[in-house]
Amino acid sequence: MKSSQSNIIKEIAQELDCGNDCYYNFKTSEILALPNFSQIFDDEEFKESFKESIKKIDKHKADFIKIEVLDSFESFKIMERFVEQITDKKLQMELENVLTNKKPFQNFKHKIDHSEFRQSWFEFKKSELEKIVENQLDSGKASAQQRI
Figure 1 (tube, rainbow, N blue to C red):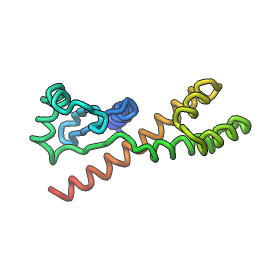
Figure 2: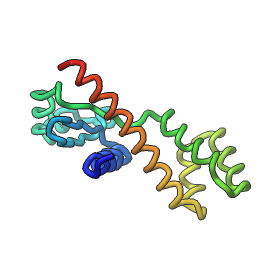
Figure 3: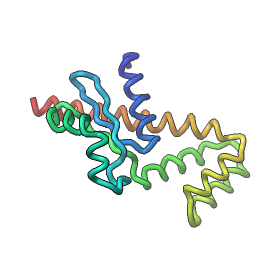
């Protein structure tokens, strides 16, 4: 993978982790990040704040690949995969229990934040997001090529 491709993937993954949808222009390598629309309460204020980006996306729609914030079930799957590979069996069992009970996201975060695996979690999640972004970019470029 080229270095610039790697940087693009990292940047998009970071934006997704912050709750932003990303639009990647595969012709210019430009990335536009907009807050996930489902999180926006004042539609008009949102449109005004991101007017230039929205115009650019609308004008060159065919050149952009949209990569959306993960659905909660996708984020949950990432947590499950992380728990599977933890070496501390006691913590692994506690986290498995957390994931089967109420408020799994909140409780998982609390448990991880107070463990020696906090940094490992961040690195794992970053890596998983980057894989998802890479797959979406590859499939987005393939479908764009078919349109040409």
